[in-house]
Amino acid sequence: GYNHPDRLVLDQGGEIFKTLHYLSNLIQSIKMPLGTKENPARVCRDLMDCEQKMVDGTYWVDPNLGCSSDTIEVSCNFTHGGQTCLKPITASKVEFAVSRVQMNFLHLLSSEVTQHITIHCLNMTVWQEGTGRTPAKKAVRFRAWNGQIFEAGGQFRPEVSMDGCKVQDGRWHQTLFTFRTQDPQQLPIVSVDNLPPASSGKQYRI
Image (cartoon, rainbow, N blue to C red; front, side):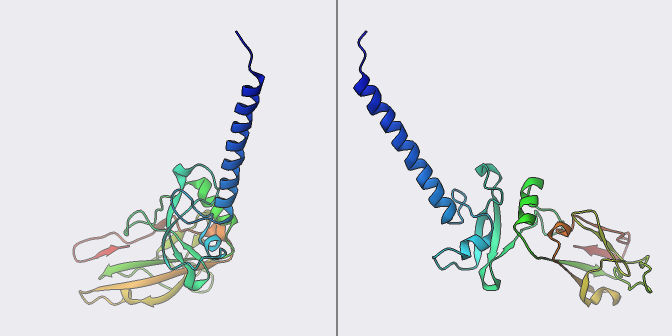
């Protein structure tokens, strides 16, 4: 056969050009993410740092900037500094469709975390302040991401902005818990424990 060195050089040059074009687009997408599933940001704050004016709403993030199969759909709150808000799988469970790897990267990219949990109750008390350093036996407990426990009278405790569940009058009420921490490893809450058993006339939902 005949050798065609000129064609070989042209083919190699074309491949190099395509590779450089791909890398240029990749770098540009990392520097200026759009928050789409195809071009996610690491966190919502990255979108806020870009030149375009962003509005609060639903976006896609990829904290570890890995493969696109584990991107996360989130709510971005640019009004309050570019908060990244995770959506629970269902409204009644404290579970999130986020892998452990992605959550760990999200922790690394965060300086402060806040979580709100509301318990709706019918004739059922879920919170009771402990005496001194002794955790209250009849209060719910919250297990943190890192295994620590938030509880009444304990070392870590949630803010309770409203405790309507202490009113037992045959109507539904709610108790609002807020968790704020500058240790991102603590959140999200992974389980709610010590809930009283539901029975006739006594119910709850999260």
